[in-house]
Amino acid sequence: MTTDILIVGSGCSGLYCALHLPKDKKVLIITKSDSKSSDSYLAQGGICVLRDEDDFESFFEDTMKAGHYENDKESVSIMINSSRDVIEDLVDYGVDFSRNEDGSFNYTKEGAHSRSRILFHKDITGKEITSKLMARVKERENISILEHTTLLDIVEKDGECVGAVVELSDGKTHLIGAEYTVLACGGLGGLYKHSTNFRHLTGDALAISAKHGVELKNMNYIQIHPTTFYSEEKEDRSFLISESVRGEGAKLYNKDMEQFVNELLPRDVVTNAIEKQMEKDGAEFVWEDLRTIPEDELLEHFPNIVQHCKEKNYDVTKECIPVVPAQHYFMGGIKVDYESKTSMAGLYAIGETACNGVHGRNRLASNSLLESLVFAKRAAADMTKKPRTVCELPKVDLSVYDDREALKKEYRKIVLDEIKKGEREDMKNV
Ligand SMILES: Cc1cc2nc3c(=O)[nH]c(=O)nc-3n(C[C@H](O)[C@H](O)[C@H](O)COP(=O)(O)OP(=O)(O)OC[C@H]3O[C@@H](n4cnc5c(N)ncnc54)[C@H](O)[C@@H]3O)c2cc1C
Image (cartoon, rainbow, N blue to C red; front, side, top):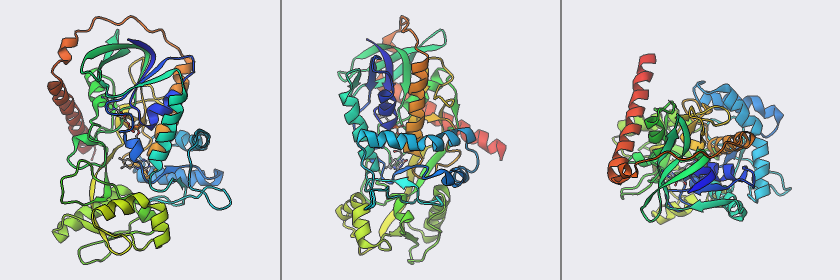
């Protein structure tokens, strides 16, 4: 099998990248599960945008401050300056953001933002964006999607990436030759017991990259979200209580129903405060009060959250809900430049699996969808500028991939070891 461009992942970064590749290029998207099972579909709060030129400095400062000033400044500038262009694309694709009566955008706010600059669609912004991207992808004859097809490895020839080894939906192992391969595999929450991520997102691209000596960066920069719904039942995925409810006024209480933290501080600070409070209270959760948000706004802006809590027997208009921190996002990843190129020729990485340094040590709310789209588009532009010829694939012994369970274990270990290595290096710098 050969294609011009192979994109691994059908989240927002993979789809948006595909849409920006020339129509005369054969683009193949493969995805480990069904095409809708990506974290991009789960995004609740929204997507940041530069509201006007006057907002640049404060947007930049909010991003840097949340990231503990470890962010790559050029990446941050590129992201902010490209944000309006991306939003225009999304609106052209049919994305419906919340608007005021006069038709202007209705912006919301989340923790650590000094101004309302987040566009949203109820509390299902990710679904709205990603389903529209998917619809546009399906209209394009040059793009095809293979579901339930897993990247097992990349194929390297003379130090360059020339394609991939994949497991097709029938369980068979195949080689795909490609001019360019783009890793758009999302985060690594599936490695954690409690995470808001889909379970099949296990950092495969990180393990495969490490195995081939592709550079990684900030592997221990893992974001724990302060507020997911606490449940005594065993849940496949922790349900997120979006930070935008705190942006709209929700409060956090300890066991005595007293406030113990400024709810609008950056995520890592609020998470630490909750963890300390839980320890002090000897409790497995703290309380979140959404009743501080006017009821009509609560029902209109956050129907998905209200419904989820209702299913768990909590009426958020009348009572507090129990919340607990859980793994949520990965700021580190495969090291890429401003065009999303990895350290291996022929290989790009975009979205959550990539690290261009934009988030520093801690991501500012609603910067992830934006960053994924901005740098996916740049990757597409770069590949378009420099077409490569698909080279003949080298001989690959496919039997080494037969034991899938052993491979899974090996990849899991590689990623966890890289995280520990990052932690050790961090300690040395303290
Ligand atoms: C509950 C939740 C709420 C969020 N809310 C927001 C928000 O409001 N605003 C915001 O900016 N961000 C938010 N985020 C973060 C944001 O959604 C993600 O960071 C972003 O969508 C990542 O997009 P992506 O394209 O990189 O990856 P994903 O959308 O996760 O897609 C990854 C894709 O890679 C595929 N894949 C993985 N491994 C393999 C493999 N080995 N072979 C083949 N395919 C593979 C998966 O099947 C999937 O299709 C939220 C995240 C979660 C979990």
